[in-house]
Image (cartoon, rainbow, N blue to C red; front, side, top):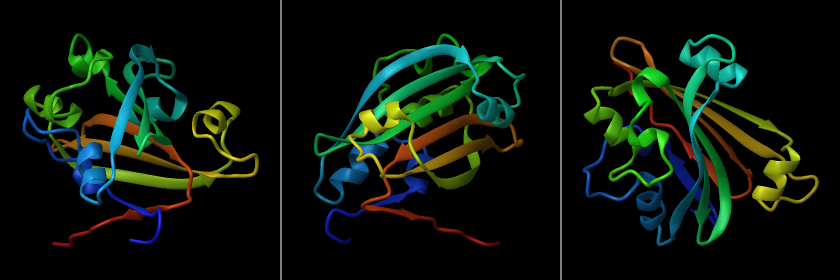
Length: 180
């Protein structure tokens, strides 16, 4: 790993962990001697953004449960993560609250009977909004990467959408693909 480079492998974020295990972000950062933390900014029922509505197959402006977080690496903001769930899955659960979830959201989804078996990710480079620029302490001309992940269960039903915004400096995304 290069100086200041973070290698992020999506597979760590798709499998449930034990209830007493820390979250995947903290574990990934710790594996390279760094400290990963997060702050939950908001959580609850919200109108689905247009792209999220399409991915979760809800009507335009329909209600979903959303969680907004800021991820920190060694105390510095490094990623904005918004996660969305269908209301019929997440309403009234820890996914709709601002408290940290023991073992993480993927473990809680599994306990509720929703296990992701397939994920689809799209990555795009773009210029950040003013809010994103301020939250991530970006320079005026600095772009961001936006990674959108859709997680589906064994029946092909969407159970989670993550929209992650991060500066590209120091980022390396790793994908492991198994065929057959």
